[in-house]
Length: 208
Image (spheres, one colour):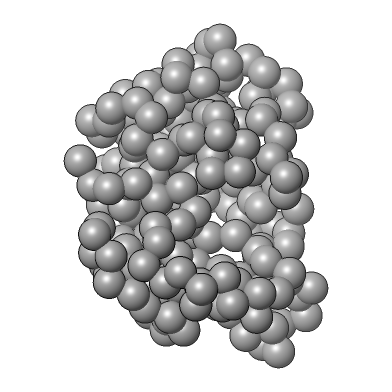
């Protein structure tokens, strides 16, 4: 299903958003609740592939639906990393961006049920579920560093707290979330961070 939705979202994004309550109506709910304010800015230009992970038409349709102003390729990180990634069909060295929400690895890394981040598995919006889990972990950062965009914060879950085969990573700048995804080794992430702590990471972008 998601492969076909992602294909259609490339050319008729507004229609795809409207057709599924876990997309369009969920974004409406997130907007009404002010959830996007908890997220910073991100670029859709992936740091590994060098290209956009979603097309411009989808980028603009998402922000229009959320009532957010954005200038391609930089937009709201929550909107892009949650709903944009769900509809991304661009492969990366780590697989498809939507896998983090659908395959259960990230949910397990947070100590949650496998389907916690499957968008249609709950009545609440996917963004609301992701925001709660990510904010809770980011409140306990293992690394911080001051950069040109603000205080960057890195949080890693404790693999001994769950039955997961991965570690949950959450990254934010100041009080705003940027992204969350599962990693195989928290130690490797810390080693990379410590080698260049002031570098902006994981497709974060300066605030407009």
